[in-house]
Length: 212
Image 1 (cartoon, rainbow, N blue to C red):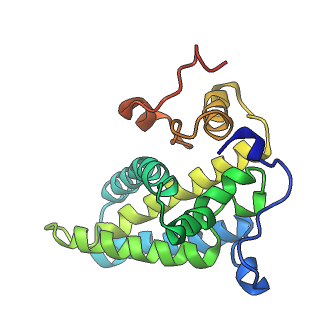
Image 2: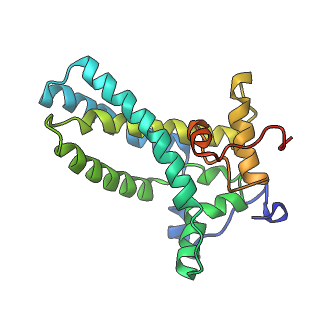
Image 3: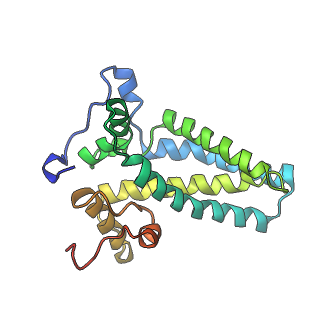
């Protein structure tokens, strides 16, 4: 998207139906409030039902958080910025992500709204449950998935902060810079929001000398 198309005020109208339009917006606290009980219940279930040790639960939990950073990169690069000549696919991409590039400061759409969020989360949990069921130790997904979800919540909160505020700490400035370059200079790079690790690994990191 060209810089002159970017609007720093206002928001896109995604649906003419007022009810559907309302479902495209949310507040960060609503999403946190929705997922914290789910995460807590899964962690309790890991311990009570499958007798997992604290070390096992913590190990899987932090592995899930780390895996989120990779999932975030892959989704942002290959799904959120999917290019197609098909009008229906273009419409889907615009609703799902491209409207954010058009109106990057629309803070009502910096978190995935509850309805699509819980549908996607349920689908991902089902896929992960099946994958983990192939392993010899049952119930591992109930420790892994809460970490994955916390990774998403931290990513979304970071994304919200980048668009709403200045970096609160000096060490966070590179993350702010990376994402703003992605929006205002070159969409084909800087896909990591919560981390630049995978941009560095896959060669999509911005050149600091060329991008002043």
